[in-house]
Length: 69
Image 1: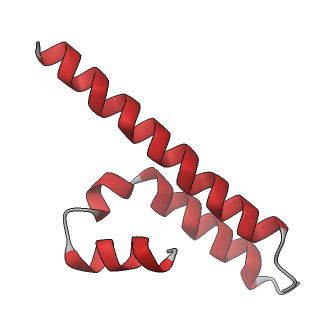
Image 2: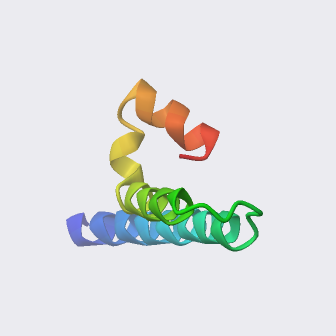
């Protein structure tokens, strides 16, 4: 039972990571801004996509996820 629960949580985490990573990459690719901050912003969004379940545990994290990192 515990293995099944961990498997479900892992699948949800991976699907969330893929969704947030696609959103960050899409914003990176289709941005009209050509500044060097664009790469920093993209890498910060990918880092946040990795730890998105932890962000759900705090109100500031939930706000940041809603704003798009």
